Image (cartoon, rainbow, N blue to C red; front, side):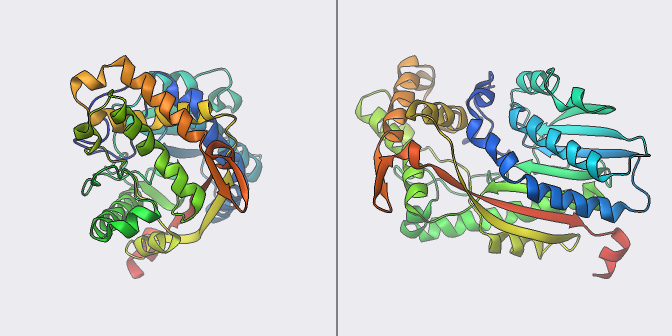
Length: 372
């Protein structure tokens, strides 16, 4: 659900809550493809997990999906995960699955529950599956100790628990040019990104069972033309709203998107501080995004950034339909802006690609961990 405190002023939350009312489910086709794109990596990790369970596989497997939003991507991910587990586990053992979907209390849980319980959901496709939701931040303890076998989190962990310091002027995100222009600010964001990652790992280390596993994707750091152009879409659109009188510069100066894009070296540095975990894989994945039009790109950005934007606005601006119409229209114009890459000029939406960071970890047995 859309709330004024969703993302900026308090920000004691994990990933930024999305727009709500089904908006993310309707526009998340960009994200959906990552489940298929990384299926072989997930399968490799599940094979590792099953091998670690032998010779006595669990009768009940407990799975937690962190950052579920409205559920569209989560249903696809858990469906694939269950298929892979069913194929890898012995066929002569009856199994049950408990699946938890986590997101912030402000999340649109009506949409999430409807999606998880829809006829096309994994909940009906796999026998003996039970579901529940958790309305908390993943920077908090979520479940009892030693109670989860598999954690998955797709495209959520780049959101920080707090904004360490706002970005001045029309800067809104820490892309490569912003980092170079604001080195002191960048240093504070980098420190917060490290602290949040270590905190997340320590919490999951308590909650995971021995030999339990985590498979995580998050937006990864990239320094290239298309990432810079994409990062400029929202601030350019908002600057036009200021110029056209539907947004004040005072409000825009307060707006910051609270995501930090990590490198694999930063992931490894965090894991090194949490001996409970073994990091098996960490890699960057450059994935083209199938965005059919500038309007589709705009709709996706509205769904994912509106809470951060409105949190900094006055009550009058926030409730003004003229602003919201103008914001989406200006986003579409920005996505239609031509960018030249390798000599080829296309609108931004037609060039779009995203760099994701994938990592696979397992939880060392507690006795073994004490000896590390």
